[in-house]
Image 1 (cartoon, rainbow, N blue to C red):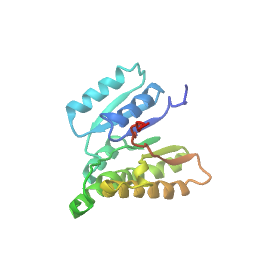
Image 2 (image 1 turned 60 degrees about the vertical axis):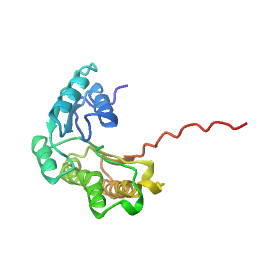
Image 3 (image 1 turned 90 degrees about the vertical axis):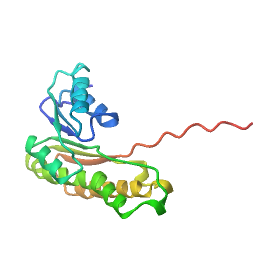
Image 4 (image 1 turned 45 degrees about the horizontal axis):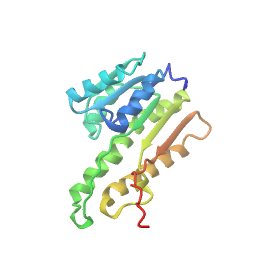
Length: 195
C-alpha cells in the first residue's frame, strides 16, 4: 500500500513499545520521516533500531523527552517544530477501585492521557491549518464510551480525548486537515459453552 507519505513528517508519542511502536513502524515503512519519543534512552534507541530493521528506507529518529509534562512537550516542539502527522498515543491505565482513586491519581491521569495530546495538538495544529494539510490522531479507547467501573479515571480521560478530537475536527472545515480518534477495544475471551 502506498499512503503517499514520502514528504511527510510524523511524530508518535508513547512509541517505544506496543501500539505506538507499531504505528511508528508502519508510518516509516510507508515513507514518512518518523520521530518517536521516550523517557528512557536505552528503550528509545532500541525502538529506533527496531523500526530501522523493519526495512524502512526513511529517516527515523528519537527524542528523549517525557511528553506527559509541559517541559517534555516543549523539548519535543523545539526538536521538531513542524509535523504533518501527530499521533497522540501516550497513555496510562490501571485497574483501581473507585473509592481508592485519589485526587492525585485523577490529576496524573488527566496530565498524561489528556494534556499531553492537547499540548502537542496546540503546538502543531495551527501550522497544519496554515499549510492546509495535516493529520492529528488520538489513540483513545472504547472505555471512553463504555467506562469500566474499575477504571473510571482512565475511561474519563479517554472521553475527554474524544471531546478534544471532536472539537478540533470542527475547526478543520474546508481544509485538508483531519482530526480523528481511534478506539481500540480490550480483547474479551470467548465464553466457553456450558452445554
